Structures are given as C-alpha cells and as structure tokens.
Length: 211
Image (cartoon, rainbow, N blue to C red; front, top):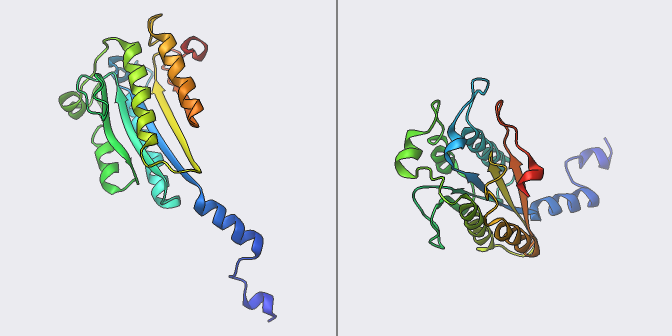
C-alpha cells in the first residue's frame, strides 16, 4: 500500500481548516417561552399543549448540543409568570436556567416540567402563570433574555433568542412600541430574535399581527 493509504486517517489542509472552523464556532441560545395560561390549554385535536411543545424543543436541542457541540450554551427563561426570578428583578419573568453548557441535570429539570394534563403541577406550584400586562411581560422577557446573552458572551459567538408563544397579539395595542424598540436594540447588539409562533387546531398564529 502507498503512503496515501497508510495515512488515510490524517486530515488534509482543507479538512483540518474546516474542523478548526467548526470547533471555534460557538452559539449561545436563550429559549424565551411564554408561560401565559393559554400556553397550557389543549384543543381536542392537539396531542400536547404549546408549553409542552416548547419544552420538548429545548430538550431536543440540549441533547443534540451535548452530543455535537460541547462549547455551546443554552438558557431557559419564561415570561408571563406568577413568580419572578431574574437578575434584573422584573415582575412576571422567571429564569429557569442561566446560560451554561447543557448537561444531564439540566435536561432532567426540563423534563420535570412536562405534563400530560393542562398544566404541569410542578410549574403551577413553583412558578405559575400570569396573564397580567402581557405586553410589559414580553418586553421584560426580551430584556432579560438579552441580558443573559450578554453575560460572558465573547466575540465571534452567535447569540440567539428563540421566542415561543401562541399569542399573536400580546400587547393588545398597549406597549407594542416598547417591544419593537427592544427587538431593534437586540439586533444592534448582534442578537438574533426568532419568533416561533405556535398554532393550535383551534387558534392559528398570525405572524403579521404579532409585529
């Protein structure tokens, strides 16, 4: 066998460069999940609530990151909550998990929030829902998520907020400008905001109405 076949396991220059680029790529993601009461209801044609679907997405991504990208960090934040827990002391915002590497314990903590009923008993007991002042809760949720991304974020890190909600009109005409301005500020800070509108069999999500 020739030299090429003897060294088949060695990367050529292009492959080595691609490997280094992949290893240097880092991503910080905040799951910003609506915790309003409607997120826990299920129509007859729905197999699970919107809240459970959002938690499932966080679980799937966390498991994938453990396997494929050990340097990426994930955080989980709820807005529209009864209890508050966040570095900025905002009402109706609860940070379940600060930015960190996903691990088995964090995955287990997310799994405990899943429920076959209308609302996880653990969530109801420890965090709870609030439909008060929805627009302000969203704006403060965005501020909190942005602050989470800023902590320890280094140059070259992709920063994203994944917003899960089934409410296409959270502001109801009040406070909409503050939410839009917050989204603009996040963009100026190189923070990507992705709105993941959640439709149900009885209530479609209208993205054009949201912004």
